[in-house]
Structures are given as structure tokens and as C-alpha cells.
Figure (cartoon, rainbow, N blue to C red):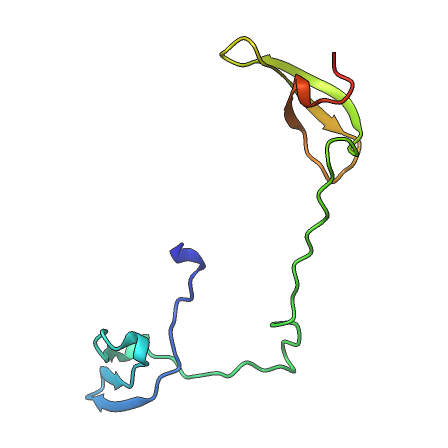
Length: 115
């Protein structure tokens, strides 16, 4: 999950500048076990979020479409047939008429009006 994490923590106040190459910062309580001295190359100036430049930054919402039951879905056609290793269960690759749904493998007993 490292790719999804923030690459920088902060903002921290600078306590002491050690020469030209290192900085000692005041760490928050949750980071108290970390060493407070960092190379200058890792330090960036703090930029506050600008609500005028990015008005939708914190107002984005996730829309999840309602889930339909198997009875309300309409099948266009059966694409493929397969038998599982047990040789007792037959499955069919079903295409739905709705564009929302993808092709799906269903057991014979789960398909409405299946014989």
C-alpha cells in the first residue's frame, strides 16, 4: 500500500538548522519515536490548501449504483458453458442486457427459468 500513501508528512516547525545540510524539526506526538533530524533535501516549504484553486478537493462523493437481484436482471444470451471439477455443477457465462453489468459465470440453479 505504499504507492497510495502520502510521500510526505507534515507540517512541522523547524527547531534548529545544523549547518547547511540538516534540519531538526518538532515532531508530533505520534512520531515521537522517530529521529527529529532530517537532510535538507527532504524538507519542503509548507503550502496550505487553496479552496479557491481547488474547490472540489474535499467535496468529492462516491456514487455506488444500487445492486439488482438476479430476478430483476435481464439476460441477453448464454455465451459459454463449463462443468466444474466435481462434474455435478454446470455453469454458464451469461451476458446481461444492461450495460452496467459485465459477463458473469452463474450456476445452472441460479439462472431464472433454467432447466
